[in-house]
Amino acid sequence: MTPRSRLHVPSPPARPGQEPDFSYVQISPAGAVGRPDVMAAPRDIETLSLQMVRVLGDDHRAVGPWNPHLEAPELQVGLRHMLLTRLFDDRMQKIQRQGRISFYMKSTGEEAVAVAAGMALQPTDMLFPSYRQQGLHVVRGNNLVDLMCQCLRLAGRWRRPSRVRTASPQAGSARARVPRPISTPR
Image (cartoon, rainbow, N blue to C red; front, side, top):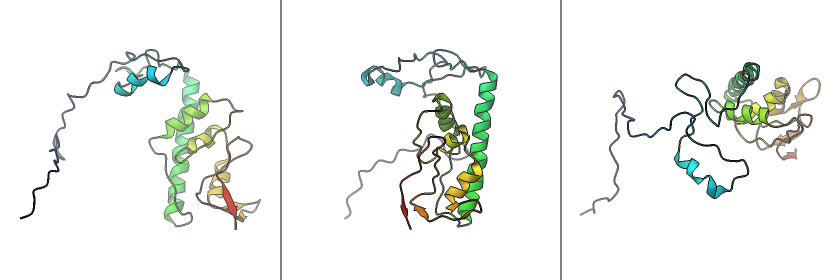
């Protein structure tokens, strides 16, 4: 006789098509969680991992100590960068699905992370992007056609195939202080 498994699989609180109940989730009021000093020790900020930092209130306005106090023109620039990042991602994914590059990782839903980081840093700061950080290139004003050509391994004025192969189709720019990933000659 086969021994009975001791693996417990809990039943889900709701099945597809049913209304889920999230009443058990504790959500802090907007602006209630304090913002620590940027030089705070890790032990002093451990409690942040147990709380939800809400910046936007129910009226969709930033409140509390996490409010960045950005003016409307700065917010519009950030939104433009996020939209350009999404358009770039959509185009690159189409190119990847055509088989012209080996893989491409979109940053859908994560555009604000890269854009906000890029906008917060100084233009002279070096950026070391990883996957899903295309927004950093957009913030630094890199030419999107040049970025696409780097990903497609096209170089030169007439966009001839490059003699450089990279492990990933990530781009870089010395002018914008964004190094390209390590590559090896053909």
